[in-house]
Each structure stands twice: as structure tokens, then as C-alpha cells.
Length: 324
Image (cartoon, rainbow, N blue to C red; front, side, top):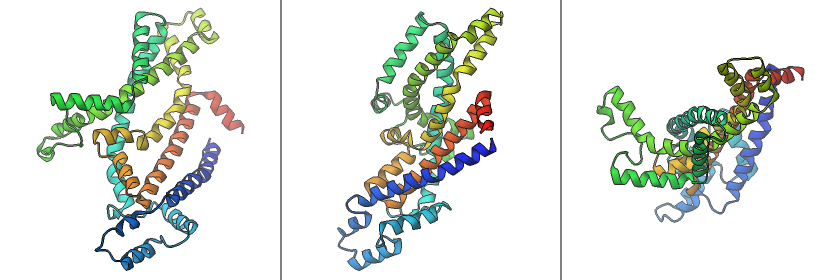
């Protein structure tokens, strides 16, 4: 297994190089940059702009700029943000906790609901409960998440039950520890529920289909023929049906950074989504590259964790890896 992990880490190197180089090239091919916007300010002289270009290395060839950025990025020195006048690492470190809070809570909620509901619907295939679950799944899968976010925001503005935007209330510092937690959860409700309702719909269908496939397999016929209790049969069915979802978990981890970006922007949740939108609109080169770099690392780490979990759950995977 150690050999497998080392091999995957070596595979990650060309992936990171390819993603970052192509992204850097696309950004540089776009017309203008952040410093071009400063030329519109009559108080900033052309000499000052040229000095800034030399300071940030923007007067050098694109390949040289990329190699210098890459050399620093290896040590997580992601440069300096033009717009925010702060190190990119500091800006990302400030926003990542909010994105992680939103994404992790919505992912846990989605998986915590989808697995038992999808499994129960599969065991009651064709029944009223199964039809009700499928109706929910089809309805919310066809509903765009941004539209659902707008509905929640409209209801919140009309009822005043939930705050719109932000993570904390103005009087947050005066609240008790329990009050602070409840206040954050109060602000978290709209973006988390928006992500969870849509994500749960798709996951329920996948879980239901996987469980039905296992239920119709010869393995289950054998288990029932042996007279195993229903609880043991359910345990074996769920364990075998979860293999494809372990791989899917890798992409869920990657989405902790990027998946909730649109909902963050719409609901005013101050996470990585808002930060990256501002960076793209202002052509903040180093901030955009920093966000992409962290997102790529999260994708690779997520896939690696998913592979290790799959090997832990399924002994056949371990045997294949050790046989290499």
C-alpha cells in the first residue's frame, strides 16, 4: 500500500504542473491585467506602473513568470494580491474556514440523509415510500441550486426568520459560547440547506440504484438461503453498495474549496467563492493562481483518500494493489 501511495503522489506532480501552467497561460493571454486598470487613475504616473511591473516580475516572459511563481508555490508562498494588498496565503487562510464550514456541514447532511433514505427506498422498491423518495429526487435534481438559493433568500427577506449574508451577527462578541454557535448555525442555514437539498437528491438516486443492484445479486440470494437475520443482510448489502460512493467521496473533498462557490456568491457567504470572483473580475493574477493551486491539491488529496478508503473497505482492491 505504501508503494501505491508513493505512486499516486508521483502522479500528482504532472497534474499540478499541467493545471497550473495552463491556467497561468490562459490568464496571461487575457487582454490587460490589474496594472492596466491603474493607468486610468491620473494620480498614478506611468513610471510608478512600470516600477510595479518590475517589482512583481510582470515585465518578464510568461514562462519565466510561471517558473518563478511555481518555485514559490512549492513552499506555499503564493505571492501578493494586487487588489487586497495582502499576501495571497493570508487571504486564502482567512476564507477557507468559512468555505469548509459550509461545504463540510452540507456534505455531512447530504450523505447522512441520502444513505439511509436511499437504502430504505431500495428495500421497499415499488412501494409508496419509494415513489415518494423518487419524486423528491427528480424534483430537486431538476431544480438549479442557484434558483433554490433565490427562493430561500426571498422567503428569508419576507419572514425575517433567517439572516441574509455574513457569518455572524453584529453583536456576536457579546453572545455566550452556546449563543455564538447558534448564531453561526442561524447564518449557515440558507446556504447549507441549498447545497444539501440538491446534493441529497442526486445521492439518493445513486444509493437506491446501487442497493437494488446488490439486492438482485447471487450473494444476497445465498445470504437469505442461509437464513441470516435481516440486519446482517442489510449490513452486507450496504457495504457492497458503498464501493462506488467511496470514489465519489474524493470529488466531494475536492468540492470543499470550489463546489460551493456559486451559492456563496448568491447568499453572501464570505468564503472562497466570493474571494475568487473578486480576483477574476479584477484580474488579480496571483490570487487567482493561488485559489486554483489549492483547489488542485484538494482534488488530488481527495482522490487519494478515496482510494485508501476503498482499499480499506474492499479487500479485493488491497489484493490488486499488493499484487503490483
